[in-house]
Image (cartoon, rainbow, N blue to C red; front, side, top):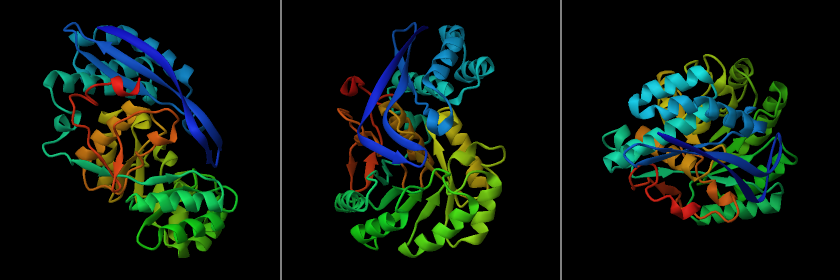
Length: 343
């Protein structure tokens, strides 16, 4: 099997403020596997060093270590390919690219979308949240009002920044009482800060707060102190987090889970604990978003997912448009069908 790698830079249309800094661009790595029968499967690695501590160079090194295995992929089963790659370099973001490429190849060979290979009756669309990126009250309110007008049923606001109370109040006033309001602190608060801030912010009516603190111990303690649903994101990587029942919901990401296969396995663990899984993007490229949509469609019955992020990039043409707060599940063979629309 022929293996090709490409490093791609994506620039945000406007800076995205998060608790760990400001993002203006990001890089992803594209993987193409050309089989002996001429079929091509494509995958994507989307590390984000400030978020997950993994660099593009780390991913490229892992994918190069995988090359001897990938070149023999026609002789091996998908499970053996993934396990052999993991033995060479246990980098989930790189494994995700391999997993996506293998699913894409399988779907193309079958002439069916990946979600139909994952379950008998995948959802035809996935509810998504709007991401509010403006760091000021006026801008956040303007974005939130536009999202509500466009039919979003949930908006997500980054907190752990300046003027959190003012921005939360402005967004709630802009969307009214019928739209769910989700907050994401990216672990930017201490336990005492989180308790104090959520006591202030809870009256705005919150669907949930994602990663208000970092770590299982702090999350468990906070959940006992505040009248707000708590979700974990970065903390989900800790041993025992997925089935530990420490949160009401768990945010799962294609890149961090090692692909579609890993995400579905993680979602089963989360559900076994009584918590709700949902799928989100690490500001992924189009292949990562497509994979997230297929996984979410196979899981069904999810809270709004954080997969409406491609419009945050400049000059990004893609088919994953949001209609009334949902994105249609991709219907072409493999992950996306024809890939020409975004290159």
